[in-house]
Amino acid sequence: MPSPLKGDPMKLVILDRDGVINHDSETLIKSPAEWIPIPGSLEAIARLNQAGYRVVVATNQSGIARGLLNMMTLNAIHQKMHAAAQSVGAEIDAVFFCPHAADESCDCRKPQPGMLHSIAGRFDISLKGLPMIGDSLRDLQAGFVVGCTPYLVLTGKGQKTIEKGGLPPGTTSYPNLAAVVDHLLKAPALVHTA
Image (cartoon, rainbow, N blue to C red):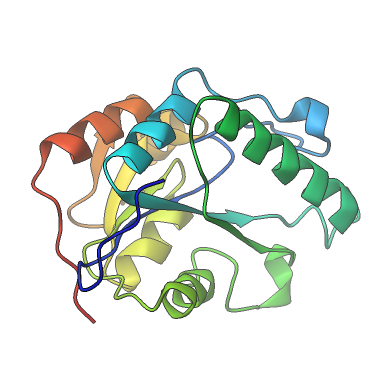
């Protein structure tokens, strides 16, 4: 993957996982067999990589706290995701996740911004203007409060999310991740400074 030249600003995109990269499930994704990519999503990540973007996933995984899956299984799901991405020339730089249940009052479960602050710290980057792509209101809210530009995909829970309304200001919606990537790659590259 091309890396930015010394002194060049980093280009980074933050993606939710379920409903954006892979098909979502009302009963959560609890095994590698249940992780099935949405057609075109991994190829869209590859196109981002080819354009010099680094791609990071930020996902709530309350199934861990609820005993529906363990860390070994979550790691196996992510290994499958990385392998599937690599098979089409895509690279996901990192996966950040919140293992807590909704009632645990942590600061990392979206819509709280803790996971995104962790991404900013790990990559030493300002979040202002970075694309945050999700299918649920909580994804967009987490991104909005830290200055990301919110993009809603209509895959996963996206259609229900747009119907409920209340989206953060500046949210734009697209049919799927591939369509958001088409838009991002046509737009002038965003310059990020700390």
